[in-house]
Every structure is written in structure tokens, then in C-alpha cells.
Image (cartoon, rainbow, N blue to C red):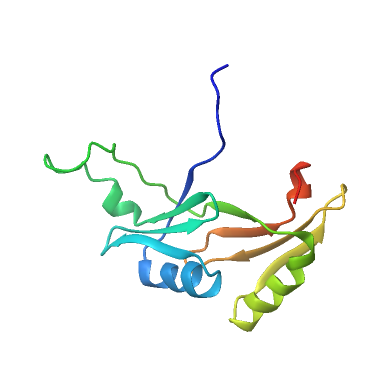
Amino acid sequence: MPTMLGVLEAALYADDLDAARGFYGDVVGLEVITAKEGRHVFFRCGATVVLIFRAEATREPPPPDALPVPPHGAEGAGHLCFSVPMAALDDWVDRLTGAGVAVESDFRWPNGARSVYVRDPAGNSVEFASPKLWDMPE
């Protein structure tokens, strides 16, 4: 099997990029890497990148002078999980609820890991979970 290092980027879709920037930038605290009005906003998250696209804009083929990235775009809510140390999950719940974000679910898995689920402004399911969920170190 060829070598793989992990997930470099993950994409979600949102119609309102300003609301997405507010959630992922202001509430979650991710750094904006780049943004293109009406098309996308990209965030740095540790060693990975979170891409937020407007699906309608990314389904259009690129113009001849653009990079040859194939059209894509999803319908409906997606899912993203942030890896959070177990000891920081209460702080995340406080931060999220303090920003007016409702916690949809907060529970412990049979292996002792904890997951906290919220929705971003586009309706995507956003999880904050201990790496123990997948038997990974914190």
C-alpha cells in the first residue's frame, strides 16, 4: 500500500459564507487562510484545512485561465469532527453556548470517549470529540 499521511483537508458546504466565517472564525477560532467572495472561505485547523464552499459556485466548471480543479458540490448537511482533548470539552461547551450555539447532543461513548454535537449556520453537523473516540492519543 502506498504511504498516506492523513487527511489534509475536509470540505463542507454553506450558502452563507459570512455566517460560516463567523462560526468557524469567530466562535471556533480557526484562522482564515483565504476567501473568495461568493465561492469559498478556507480555514487552518492544526495540521489540516477546513474548506467551506458555496456548492452552487463550485459546481460550475473552472474558466480556461483557472486552476484545473474539477467541479464539485454537495447537497444537504455534512459532518466534521474536531479532535479536542477530553479535559477541554467542558470549555468548548461553555464557549459554544456562550456564543448562542445550541448543543444538539453531549454524550460518552462505550469506550469512554465524549462527543459534543452542534450545528453550524448552514446546518452541518459539527462534532467536538476526544481522540479516544477512535483510540487515538490526545
